[in-house]
Length: 296
Image 1 (cartoon, rainbow, N blue to C red):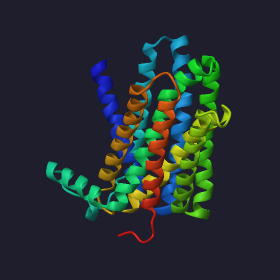
Image 2 (image 1 turned 90 degrees about the horizontal axis):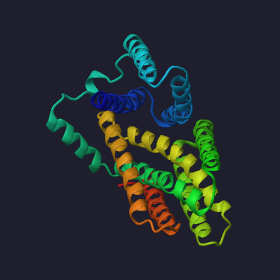
Image 3 (image 1 turned 180 degrees about the vertical axis):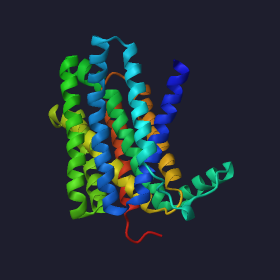
Image 4 (image 1 turned 30 degrees about the vertical axis):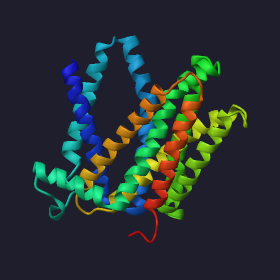
């Protein structure tokens, strides 16, 4: 079971990369940003619904039927994909599969300064998000004396803000353009980190700490959609490779943010606020650098 769960995870990772790359083959610019936000909205709702379905199946039929449910729906999605999803990558934009081509494609992406800044913007905002996910249960429950159920309400509110942020991005992208939205997101990420910093040192009340965490959940999703759009617009070839690299680094930085806030933890809020501040500054500077008009 462990072995096949591993292959299930690998398959899920492939679909994550190929799905986003296929969308980028057909759309670009603001339309791509809107579609990525729609995808983000679905990905926000899914983790809320999935545990409920799994819990119902476990209570009514037992845990083994969860795997039966996944098998049936996996087969359904396979048939839908096989019959309806056509190849989106044009022949002239394809590269032959060679190990050397893979590494050279990564090198091309990393040499592109704009692409690199888009990836750093996405990755640094991911570090902020994962640092919040790691530190908030301990801080809110142990330090701020919230009950586990109260913390779940706070986290649920954050999930709702994340969903709302994707909807707002869908509505505003045609009006402002995704690059202008990146500018605002960079400003808000930095402002949010300062809000948390001042709250952590007692200059503001505890509401500022709660509010900053909730807003980070929304800002991360908008940063995800807009940065991936900017990255995809940089390439005609190798969109899948660029997507794979960005997603890998996103989770790598997310893990880094979680590890740092855990390793330097001293049962106070200060490791959390400083970790958030550093990665927020990195995210804001990277995002602004990526959308500079006169970029050499």
